[in-house]
Image (spheres, rainbow, N blue to C red):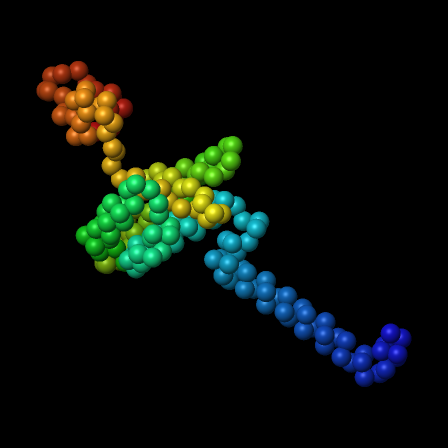
Length: 188
């Protein structure tokens, strides 16, 4: 070991090695900061970031009509109806891009395998205009990955069918009738 440092030529290469290591570390830090998609998969990122990333992946797959990824990201009894409904919205309104923001995330307090997420979808239309819509989405962690649970519509139970309940909206109150709860709250 002493012979290595006593050689005058090896002293010239030692600073070069340090500079190379510093450059490599700087490059790694720059890559992590420049590529947020890589940073989201790091172990110290929050579940909110992972969920937001997954929601963006779902809506990007919808834009590309990537059925393979959609089947991997979406599960539930309304999977096909959800995909068809969203594809119809994209086609009807001419949506060219989506950005999903997870505004509020509530995780299952016991196991952390379910997440209720308030989502804002910001859509860019063909003419460059932006529009947004908000909604509540439920995600489930399957095999360590978050998947969207799709339930479009509500299935009626046998008891509700016997009672004559339907999924149809109720007619508005007659003129002069007492205001409903929704009118008192200012919701039409």
